[in-house]
Image (cartoon, rainbow, N blue to C red; front, side, top):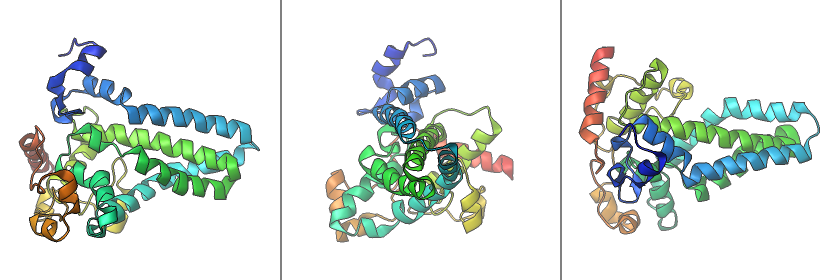
Length: 274
C-alpha cells in the first residue's frame, strides 16, 4: 500500500464504497491523493485563483482587501457554527417536501455514513451560493468589490482547509500532532456519541461560548439519534421525502467500514483523558 503510485491509489477499488472513497479504509498518503484530485477541491482552487484576479482588477488599496481577509479568517468559524448548528441540524428542513432533498445532501447523508468522502464534501451547488452571499456580502460591506473578491477567496481557502481536516477526523489514521488528534477526538464524539454538540471543525471557540462543547463522553448520555439526526423510522413515516430520495429507511448506525473502530477509539481516548 505504501508504495502505490497516484494512479494506483485512484484505481484501487478496495479504498472505495461504491463510487466514493471510504476514509475508514485509507491512510494519509491516500487521503492526499483523493483530496487533491477531487472535483470539488479542484473547483475551489480554480475559484480562489479567479478571486485573486478579481481583487487585482478591482484593487483600490490594501485596506479593504486586508479588512475582508481578516474578517473571514476570524468570522468563518462563526459562520460555519451557525450553519452547522441551526441549518444542518434542524428538523424543519426534512419536514418540508421542497427542502428535504437539500437537508439530505448537506448533512444527513454524512451522519448516516461519516466515512464517505463524496458526502463529506458539501455540494458546490449549495456551498458556492452561500459563499457568494454571506462571505461575499460581508466582504463588500467592508471593502467594496475588492473586499467582495478577497472575502470569497479567503472563504474558499478556509473551506479547503476545513475540508482537509474534516477528512483527517474521519480517516483511519492517528495524527502525530496533539492539536489534530484533539480535534479529531472531539469531532468523533459529534458523530458517534452526541450530535448536539461540537459543531466546530478546527475551532471550538464558539462551541465553548455557546455551551455546546464537550470532550468527555462520560459527561453526556449517548444520543439515540446520533446517526439519523432525529430522522428515524417514525419521522420517515410522517415525512417520507428523504427516505424516498435515499431509497431505504434511515439507519441507526452507519454502513461505513470502521464504525466499531471509531467508537472504540473514541472510548479509549476518553478513558485516557479521564
